[in-house]
Length: 110
Image (cartoon, helix red, strand yellow):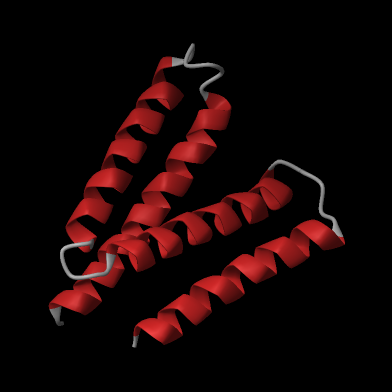
């Protein structure tokens, strides 16, 4: 496995850590609950560290766009599925546009 492929895997792990931290943030209740608060801190620290390692072999702008877009789309989708947040056509179209944007950015990078 080449360094660029490994960097993409690290970036995916970074997105996963950020999503876990954001879900835990919902349960941290303003950082008054210790376990979810600890999960938030550890997850966000891991997400930043993993991204910092990934950008050694990826363009920073591309990596950040993929990270932010993927994380936002995943959190929005999980919010609709797990937390019963509103599922509107506009919200679903917004998530689809984020995913399309991430795909287009990746196609342009090659």
